[in-house]
Image 1: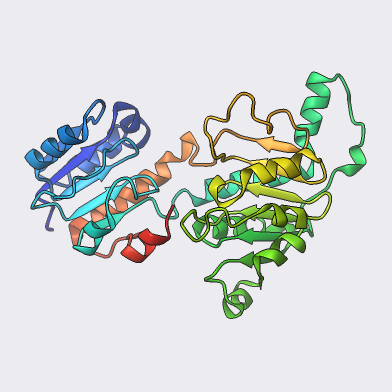
Image 2 (image 1 turned 45 degrees about the vertical axis):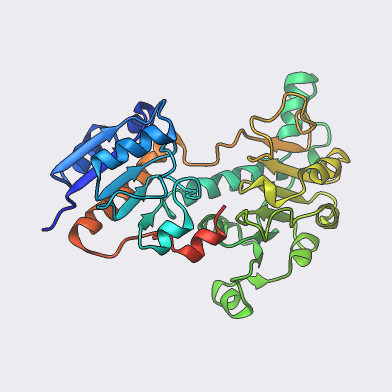
Amino acid sequence: MPRPASLLAVLTPDEQAKFLPAPALAEVRALAPEFRLLDPTGLTPADFARELAAADPEVVLACWRTPSLPEKLPPRLRYVCYLTGGVRKLVTRGQLERGLLLTNWGSSISRTVAECALFHTLACLRLAPRWTLMIHRDGGWRDGWEQNHSLFGRRVGIHGFGQVARAFLQLIHPFGCAVSIAAPDVTDAVAAQLGVRAVTLDALFADNDVIVELAPLNPVTRGIVTERHFRLIRPGGVFVNVGRAGVTNEAALLRVAREGKILVGLDVFVDEPLPVDSGFRGLPNVSITPHIAGPTLDRYVDATAHALRNLRAYTAGQPLEAVITPAMYDAMT
């Protein structure tokens, strides 16, 4: 079986502990006769470029803290296996066009992000932020409990239809929801196959009890969800965003949320960490988590297993999963 001549793993000690514990690290080491583990902590772009040139690997295993690849790549470099998600800070489109093979974690962590979307959906419907404040801060109990709602049989709209949206659709299947989707790749024919409705963005916000924001952030989608859309949500409706904050007009969302007519669940924000004086803090109709949708620590193994499958496939000359093409690069956050 052919093997890559050289493999360079670029991970901090913390990333190694999360993604490459001893058994996985041993498996990666065995894939190439030349193996090196490089800690990028403190490396300048120039330092990293020199280290990369000196190693001249055929394969790079990269992670969050891996510096951007230099424009001029080492002669032997053919494949970058990225353990995590967004690749724009790691490689350029031109490098992909010139033949660099790149994969990321694909759908391996989608279910955990979808799980967080479901968590916020249920927290909003069940008024969890309100009860938390009422019980812990105000000494109250169940005033207004009749306003609780269930997810069963609700109308759910999903903006975007990437891997997380697909996983979310599977998660809510047992709830018997009527689902509609606003996404450029979901035509009426595709929607019919999925058992959902393809709708416009306006209809998504106007006609559903729950709207889940999962569209990628790119030049087309930046700021596409406006105050007008938020005001289309019916009183008691839910808006959840575990995707990208920049898809929405966040200031407009705060204005509408402060009026208290809708419920909001957020894991992502334009400014992170969320400022201490943010108006979202302390609102009884807003469920907040600090950008932790996924993967959870116990599920990093899913991304590791995915990367190992791709590395083994590359070694065997077989097709890879989650290959990033130039067109996909353009659509990614």
